[in-house]
Length: 150
Image (cartoon, rainbow, N blue to C red; front, top):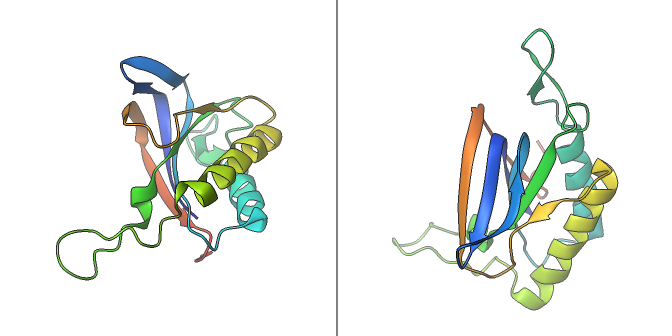
């Protein structure tokens, strides 16, 4: 699983002109799934996300987590995170899971994030054409791949 995490002042996602998910201070997370992903990946990434110390403390140092600042999460599914650009100029998405595999993983991630964060998680709509608006705070953008835990 690959995620792109952005610390935001606010973010929202629209589907067909209607807001599907909206947050103030928190994390906008794009998540892409592959067939090799499993419950262990979900548990690990959710714990990592909820405990990343990427919010400023009283001294202006990135030293607090989303839980400590009582922030929110907006989670968006994004299969293009598994794009391969090795050959040619047209990306291949062969590593990205198809909906029968990806949807249950996405739903598990939503539930795990809710459990770890202790509150509801805002979302887009899986597979929909979504329009995402955000104000990246910092900017802070972090990429994590559960298959490459650095």
